[in-house]
Image (tube, rainbow, N blue to C red; front, side):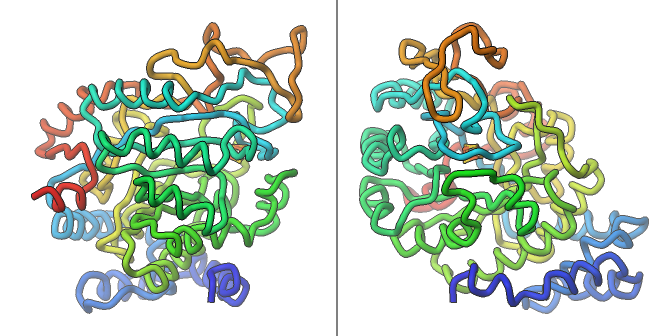
Length: 403
Ligand code: SF4
């Protein structure tokens, strides 16, 4: 059964209610079961760990301690680095929270395969060996053939290539996997049906079930690493956390040969000036990350440059195992590639000034969102070194395979 089929039968409303009303005894029982039984925590345990009660002293401190110990046990003092490489900011979807949304009159560009290779070379010189190719969803500019060609061009120099692009059919993924891609990342954004429908105004992304099942289609095509996440700021985070945990548990059962990672991205300012519908403070983010670690001790937890440097440093010992650094969220952002192809679209059609443009830096393509940690990769690695962590610039399995 695919996750979209299972989704409606999950008792998410009941679990959310249980989380809201969880008692000290519920939290203590979940804490006692974590890391001791050798079995995964139940969704009810996870709901208790993400409850308001578990955010209170002394429970959050206990959660953090246990999360730290489990992370150290399963991952050591190692942080894997990856670099996002935006290949296109074209998109046919209207997503209210995203700078690339079709209705935003922004500067757009799709890099040629050679321009992608130039950006990748810059990242390789920074030390990265794990790259994440990112794009909006546009079958004309970002076709499956284009993605396959990008992967094939990079494959010889990049031991680990992942994609974060619009969902495709299994048969469209197969040539991309054969060209050398091994990771597929798809954030569901929100698991709340009402909010999902309101946020995704038009375009293929409006089909929630199609997106829910994307990673299973990717797994069927041969992807070895799967990444999920919810965009925090659209719906109450505790509800999102429970649904995300259900999704993770489903994928661990169904796609058991793949490695799973989970991301916890909070909304950042972007073109369109969308404001978060709900807030999640830093303490709540800590609780979410620690609860994920207790429920999924061996799953990689990812933190991007959406979060500021100090908070990122503080989250490292608590459960994070994978980070980006020095990121750009616009195509051509690392080397200035693609400026010659810049154009402006609104509603999917080319428009000309005086249509007001979202402010962008000179002639660069517009960013998807603003980053908050502006340190270079070397600076982040140096700080991790001071904290006693070793930076691994490629994915763990790639290291093992080469050993
Ligand atoms: S979130 Fe993705 S699909 Fe939606 S507008 Fe942005 S790039 Fe396009």
